[in-house]
Length: 96
Image (cartoon, one colour):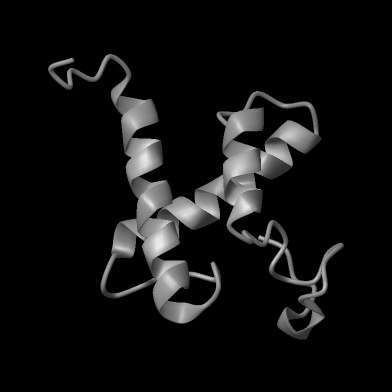
């Protein structure tokens, strides 16, 4: 294998996932602020994962896959950080 990437979107997704794992290892959680100074792309990416997950749950077209959901869940990703259906109620209940 020479490391050629056929699907750059998929490769980028896994790069961000690895960034999220590094964030979790450093901070003890996956609650990346949307405007995360050291890695602004990561905060935006995390926000988009939640949005894609909501679309999938509503039956709308989404880039979220079962494999991605399982990977994120396996590292303790919080799908609803603002208290809807989670134990993170201290974040209130406002929606996007």
